[in-house]
Image (tube, rainbow, N blue to C red; front, side, top):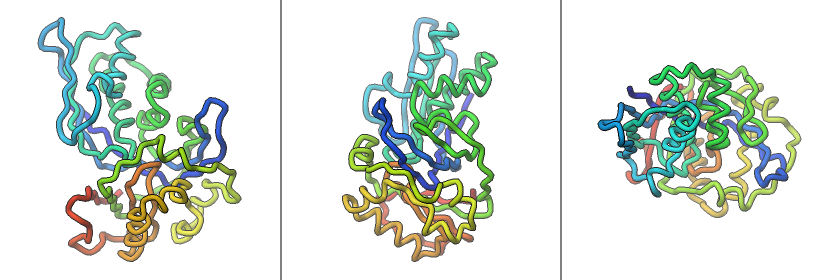
Length: 272
């Protein structure tokens, strides 16, 4: 069985305060994007063997430390799952602020739930996902939400961007979560993100802000330049996604081709 874990973008990201547990409370709108990895699971070839293999973009580290395998181990402990062959084909860049690794983990939980007929509810799957990473739980239901606290508590939000063309640009620059958070200064905003997003998209340029841009743009000028370039190309709104280095633009129609980005950049575009 094959599933296709998808990316997400952040429409605004406000870092409001440092938590006693060392994490940060935040407010952000998570919006799913159809840029996908591929995840396949088969019964193990031999009853005594488990395997997890990778292809596509190189993924650093021991495969058994991958969130996909951790998701399998998490459910196996409580539901006595048999051995499996799991394969991940990686397409979504890492360190890009697109939630690709979190999506892979969440989709592994959903895949196991389907294949082995565990009949776990979305709420139960979200509880498992929260053990794997702060934004993993989003990908269980995989629909636009306002994420609060550590990014793992969700509020419904009425937001529809289906009429817009999305352009994602990853400048081959990985930014770790630790690096991104090291320089932030959390504060409660004057205007709530929920209020800002409820206004016409033409106002978002001034009101819907990703707080990571303030500290990361001076360190990585290419990010600021890409945002300016997206507006020059006609974007109605452009921003950095999450704490990674992907910049995105929302357009009323597809931008003119060919796109003016270096060949070493990863670019995705399509209708939301």
